[in-house]
Length: 214
Ligand SMILES: [Fe+2]
Image (cartoon, protein in one colour):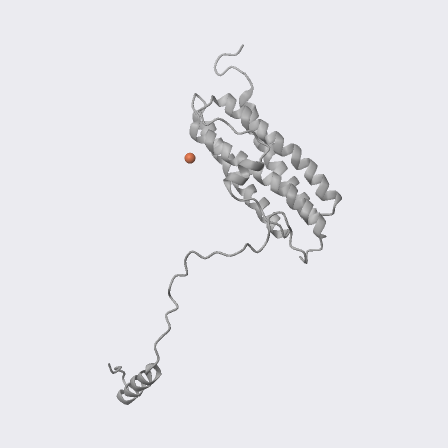
């Protein structure tokens, strides 16, 4: 069909050119989906990339990655413990703890992302999937059943303490080896966040009267 323009002759020329361009040439279809692709992985879990120009030796990066992967799986477990307790909570403190547990869940989720991305930035590979987390965490698996709020809080405090103890050890190790970024992440983010969360939930385990003083 001829293109209509203000300039009739120019419209005719354009249409002629379009016809010439497409004459005899079929457009190769490159819009097809390439599904079910598979190949050998490009990096093995447990290794770090060799030549990463960030000024930290390969063996130091490897040791930081191993430490961070332990903190990662434990943080993912604690994160999920907070959501479990957020959902399954019951009792007179329901509202405040329901909100508090979800706030802590959100903060732990942010830590998970920071830790995993630090592992990648060091040339390593982070744990990611639930079965790998379950296999490697140091935090005990909770029952599927609903528990009382004080038991939930005790469970959370135990998990926090495992993370805090290992983080202090790993932070010192990173400091000794000159990995300042990992030390900073562990101290400024992971340790500080966990200590603050311990404060907020542990205060709920003090047996003081609600209405009438002793
Ligand atoms: Fe919720």
